[in-house]
Length: 202
Image (cartoon, rainbow, N blue to C red; front, side):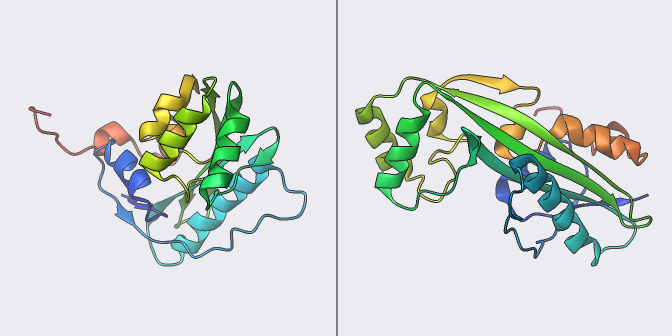
């Protein structure tokens, strides 16, 4: 039976994978995340998801490695981290009444065969019409200066949204679990069969 390894040390991805109640380990991938010139956002996240899985695969035998990468895109441009309050204010003002798309690259790699299955899962966030006072207060409270797009969807950022649109809400946080269970099944790994017993009180 293959072991499962998450090629990420993100606490959010770890938390999401724990929802499946399967045993897994985590390992930090060491990869260069610099985009290739003229690379589309979709191609970037899929390539990096595969690279992360390949980097971690070197350290594990008889394992299925899960790689994932995510970018947020607005008007065709990848959103960076604001780093300053002024940049965060500008980003959020530009999102007011508009849509931001999150693209998550997902990969499963079999270390026994080298076989790779990968995909890109989109998720759309529709922003409310934002008042400058609300934006300023949000930035002061949550301090999202190191977050791409200047908001934390898993926190108070939800107050900025009008609608969420996508197949799997877990995608927004960084790991599309519905697609992951499908990819694992293509390697004959059934999540339900391998899930640990959960407390009846949960």
